[in-house]
Length: 590
Image (tube, rainbow, N blue to C red; front, top):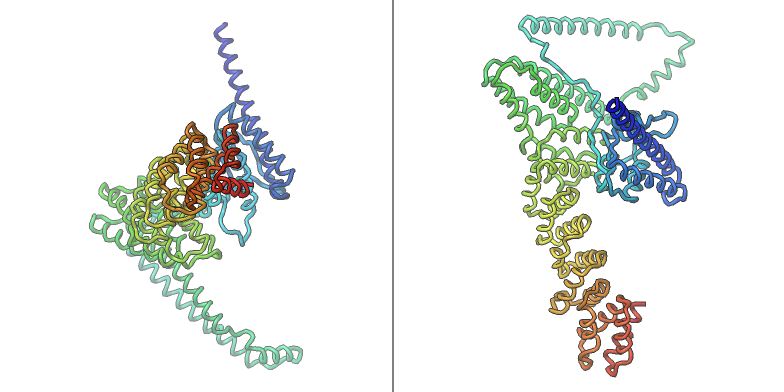
C-alpha cells in the first residue's frame, strides 16, 4: 500500500510539473502577442514597446532557467508546445501563428543565453513581414537567416505549393485501342468545330443584311464609326500571342512529363529505361531554361515519390532511377539558371519562392553550378534567395563551396565568404581564418568581419592583421581589440611596440596601439610607458614624438597613482620635447 501511494504521488507530482510548465508557456506566448501588437503600433523605442519587451525577456529567462530550451511548433492558425495548443489566432485581430506558417516556419526554439537584442530583432521581423504586402521584398525566413540570431533556432520549408496535387500515374495504361479512340475523338471534335464556325458565319451575315430598326439607328451608326475601339493594337496583339504561347507551352510541357512518367513505368528493359531517362533529363533542363519552376517542381516531387514508393517492380529500375535523381542536378542542367535568374525581379516574388522550394531538392554539389550565378546582375530578392540556398546546401556539405574559394573572381569569393560567415562550426572558422590571408583586401575584410562577429578567442591568430595594408581592416582590428580588455592583448601590443614591428607608420596606427595598451594594462606596461615618455628627451624625431604622445594617452587610460606620477613628471620635464608631447596628447584626449 505504501508503495502504491508513492507511485501515485510521483505521478501526481509529474502531472503538476507538466501543467505548471504548460501554463508558463501560455503566459509567455501571451506576452509575446502583446509585444508584437505594440511593435506594430508604436516605434520600437517607445516606452510601451520597451516595457512589453522586458516582460517577454523576463518570462523567457525564468522559463529557460527552470525548464531549459523552449521549442514551439507552428501550425496554420495556432502554436503548440509538446502537442498542446498554447496560442490560437483570432482572425479578427493581429495574428501570430499564420505569418510564421505562411512563410514556411515549422518550429521555433528559444535557447538558453538568449539576449534582449535577439527578442527585439525577432519582434521587428514579425512586424515587418507579419502582413503580406504586394510590394514587400523578402520574407520571414530570409530575414531570420540574415539576422543569424545565435540563440534562436528554427526550421523552415516553402509551403507555397504544399497544397498542390501530387500526381500518381501508376493506374494508367495506354493501349493501342485507347490511342486510336483518342485520335477518332479528336477528328470528331474538329469536324464539329468546323460546322459550328459555318453556322456562326451564316448568322453574322444574316445580321449584317437585316433591315435597320429606327430605335437602334444611333447605336448602329456609333458602332460603325467607333469600330476601331474594339480593334487590338499591334502591341496588344503581341502580348496576347505571348500569353497564349506561354499557356500552350506550359500545357504541353506538363502533359509531356505526365506521359513520360506513365511510359517510364511500363518499360521492360534497362536499355529502354535509360533512353527514357535521358529524354526526361533534357526536357527537365528545357523546362528550367524556360523558367517553368512550378512544372519542374511538381514533376520532380512526383518522380521522387515514385522512387521512394513500392511501385517500382523491376529490381534493376530502382538503382537507375536513383542515379538519375542525382545526375539531373549536374552543372549542365543547373547551368541554365545563369540565363533565367537575372530576369527575375521583385515582380516575380512567387516564382523566386518556387525556385527556392525547387532548390531544396538539390544536392550540395549543385553549389558548383549555382555559385557563379552570383556574378550576374541579379535583383535583390533573387540574390538573397540564391545566397540562402547556397548556404543551406553548404550546411549539408561544405566542400563544394570551399573548392570555389580558389576561383580568381574577387566579387564571387567575397560573397561566398559572406555566406560562410553565417555558417557556424569549427570547419568554417578555419576556412575563414585562411581567407584572412587572401590576396584580395575585400575578401580579407569580409573574412575578418565574419570572425570578429563569432569568436573572441582568435585574438592571437588575427593580430597580424593590425599591419594589413588596407586601412579598413586595421580599423576593424583596433575596434575588435578595444572590445576585449585582457592581458593577452596587452602583451601582444607591448611586444608589437617594443620590437618596433609597426609597418604602417601613420599617426593613427601608433596612437591606437598605445591607447589599447592603456586599456589592457599588464605588469610590464608601466615601465615601458615611463621609458617611452621620459627617456631620450634630446630625440626630437617625429616617430619619437608620436610614441611620447601615445605613452601619455596610455597613461591617461590607466587611471592609477603610478601613471599620474609619471604624467606629472612629464608636464614639468626639462626637455621641451617631453612637455610638448604631454600637452598635445592631453589636448587631443580631452
